[in-house]
Length: 135
Image (cartoon, rainbow, N blue to C red; front, side, top):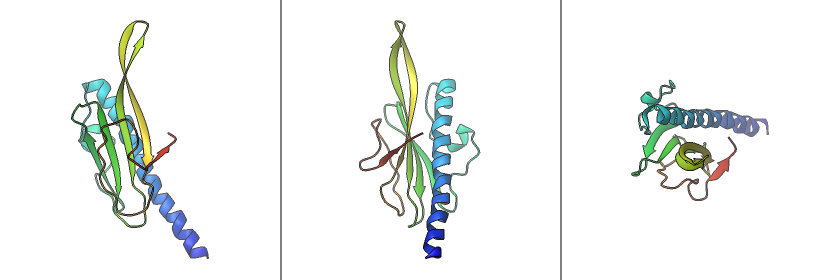
């Protein structure tokens, strides 16, 4: 009984890496947009010091054709972990009669464990059947 519990806790710790890294990618995309008025697919350009691949995850960013949504992937490379996706997108709002651009982020968890697939969002919601996580 103790071994399955230990393995479950070990996998949760590994998944925490992906949640933290994808969350960092989301925040870095927001900062990058403020500075450059665009999103980037380069993990290195985000300046957050994470590797594009670890033992358990591959980290990849994709920008949609409109340039208004970036998908930050933490794709599981093993059959025992969930994948994670961060979506950073632009939202136009009017404040005191002036139109402003806000960057909004969400974090999503795959519904199942296993080797993940890269996601590219063209909308501001989680991929189908994925779980929206609190940030």
